[in-house]
Image (cartoon, rainbow, N blue to C red):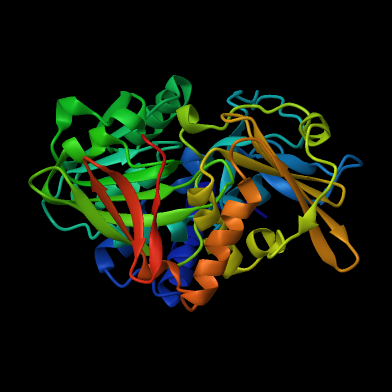
Length: 398
């Protein structure tokens, strides 16, 4: 029996993916559906990694390489699934001619799951005639979709990794998409094509980069994900005013993106060394660490608020002990379970867990408001997350 033509199979899989996305309410605009059905995602991901569904003896995630040569059917099926496909770890480009199984590692490039890509473009409120700056070209799949939707001449996309951009450019041009592409750090936008009606970031930032405000037309919008060193995330849609200030709501839902590389946290060494310098006597915690670490939508939201309260802190768990470490100020804290409660020890100029406790108590007293009730304001005085029943929370200086 003659095997089916791969491009015919890919076209069928694209239609099936589009149908599934439509059922989920993500393709109400027929022009977006047409883009999904036209753009061949498999060409943008010749190789990627998928989790094996197990951990190794050290507790690290096992990542399996997937290519057409290794398993054509699996590769094509995954390319047209609503899944994020990891294409790079720790900034190192894999050898896709002889890829190896990986153990652990920090993903640094990917093809974002199509439903999130479409959600981002929809949330940015794109209209006919808009000019768009995309930060984080990645594989180029998202770029191709917006080129199909608006026209290549309306799209600029920047990527900090030159090898990533070279690969994306080759595929984009091969598919007939000709946006403006540049190797550039998204923190600084792209002045040669400014000003833009919309700026959309496929990476996350600790605070809103000032260059993006300056490169947005008055009345234009910026959609980006805020993140930080506690790996708390929130999405915000800002409208930029003529005076360069901006304001906008946090958006509901749980979305995370890889951090802009220049916003990555500093290494802090061995947590035991930090814990050794803490006072021997502890106190009973008002709130346990599960408030910000459990796998719930509220905890996802609270982790971001906690991050605003202690913007330079990092969190790690060793055994049963939760460590908070601030490599900037030299502060640290530990939370240890003891007799059905948590015991806190903290030291240094910033009482890390005490500040998080204050935020959590204020949040509870305010009725546990969701992310969509918060507003981010960006002015010359700084960037502040505001809620009518809570003290303002500052973001780090960009």
